[in-house]
Amino acid sequence: MSLESVRYRRGSLQVLNQLLLPQSSQYDSVSGVREGADAIRTMKVRGAPAIAIVGSLSLAVELTSNPPQQTAELLTFVRESMERLVGARPTAVNMKRAADELNAFLSREAEKPGVTVQELTDRVVQWAESLLEKDVRDNRLIGDLGAQHILQTTNAPAGVVILTHCNTGSLATAGYGTALGVVRSLQALGRLSHVFCTETRPYNQGSRLTAYELVYEKIPATLITDSMAAVTMRERQVSAVVVGADRVVANGDTANKVGTYQLAVLAKHHGIPFYVAAPSTSCDLSLPTGGSIVIEERPSQELTDINGVRVAAPGIGVWNPAFDVTPHELITGIITEHGVFRPEELRDGLSQGK
Picture 1 (tube, rainbow, N blue to C red):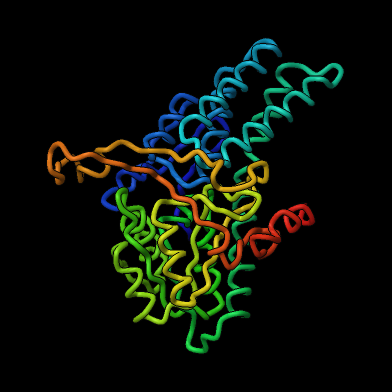
Picture 2 (cartoon, rainbow, N blue to C red; picture 1 turned 90 degrees about the horizontal axis):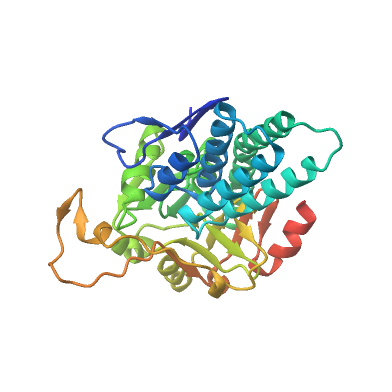
């Protein structure tokens, strides 16, 4: 059974506090939008799909416990709540897409003759709840399609060796995962030889979270430092690099956890295919290139301190972007629930898949 990043029943939402992993598995209650935005901003919950799900469900929980009495009040509350949630971490597109879709959905529903504010509230809650089921379903498709594609295009009779970055499993989604979903599917087919996961400094999502999931699910894996990627590719017969994405734009440029770009450069040098695994909700075709993506910058203490202890020289300047953008020329394929596409095929592929 996969780990649960989110526990939800109507009127109740709990998120696994990922700041405490792997030492402690603690679920924190989220009673409304303010707490949802705080959980996202402080990275109690992270991963583009999970951010959208937790944000939307935090709205559902608040509407269940404190429903508006007027339609205009509901429309305003939903719009302002989604703006707050989008602003918590702006680089990941999934929350913005969810906000746009929900506002459009609610506006259409509100125009229907005779609809009551209670009916509208119930529909918003149901809409948010549907994201959970859809995310798991999409992730399983991503895993299966990615695994099949890699097996068809990679000559690895002894089993596939995957290198991955950051955390893209159950902890970053509603369940199963994206890039780690591909790993799970390869394992289920009996065709996975080994996984190498980077530590993913400065927040250590790889060593704290991905390693935790791999051990939990008994998947053969080894942790490496970020600076070991090149020698690992050269010495450990890596078959493919598979990473996740926080935003994929129209030409295939991809924003993902900082350090992804350098892995793509290294993979190119070593002749190793480089794949991005992401649901269509992470694809933002409104932006032509990666130069338009807003890159979140995190507090300097994430780089200078470890568990509250200062490790960097006082007075040193810090630049701490949370993401970088991998140019589409370095990406072999983008794995979605609709298929595996070359970057130049993405727009048409997603249009046909809808």
